[in-house]
Image (cartoon, rainbow, N blue to C red; front, side, top):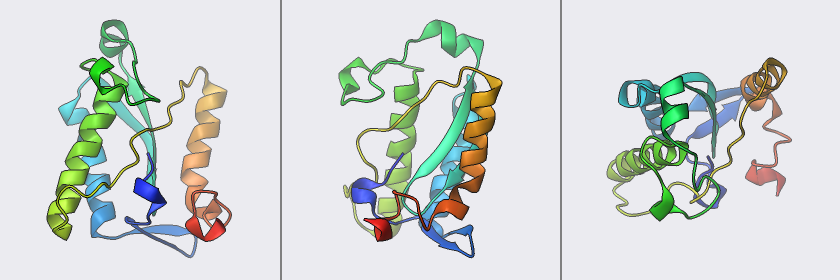
Length: 151
């Protein structure tokens, strides 16, 4: 999930390590609350970067059987089903935006891009590759295309 206009809001990478600021701590705190709010998911590897969040979640059988992922790449809010990935992301973005805007005194200012990228992990090799990418993301920040200094 990327910030609106790729603005670096959540901290900075210092010596190849991500250092969260107060806004970044909100992003992390709300991400960590996800399983208590949505018991149908478990968190796996994640990282908050200056202008985006990478995270993997494990969807348990209940969610997999009860919902289809609708609208994950579009503005399909009317198609968003309860307990879907789109619903999870929308709720997460909403609460983070509210907390950040309250802290900054910037009500109704967008924090996130409207869309997000998702990928279904189908095997252990894919999971390992993605976990490695997430863990190493701060090491790659200097060359990362999400880094606005590289635009």
